Image (cartoon, rainbow, N blue to C red; front, side, top):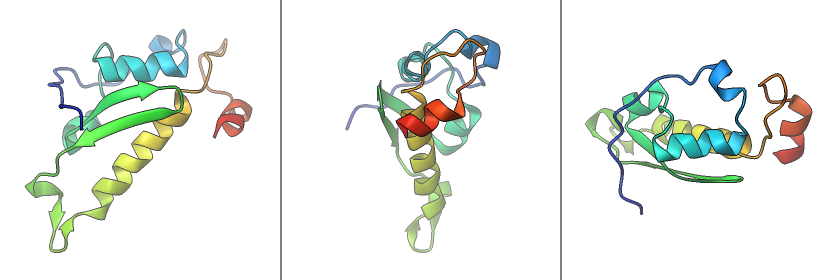
Length: 110
């Protein structure tokens, strides 16, 4: 597995910032650290370590707060899977004129 990088910036990329980017540019920006990871990444301790069209790799090392009596809480895995799948789909969307993903395009690429 890739080594986790130290992320110094967490935040939300505004829709205005995203407007001129393709989905792939956006997710590559997250992976490279040129764009901030969302606050949930800080809470759950995950990092985006690879990004290419239709494929994303997220890494996390479960900590004590991610455990339940049976081991790692399934909610952590489900949230990481949700984020990974969502960003993988987003990476295939071109930048529309209005800066938002068009539902027809998302359906075609999913």
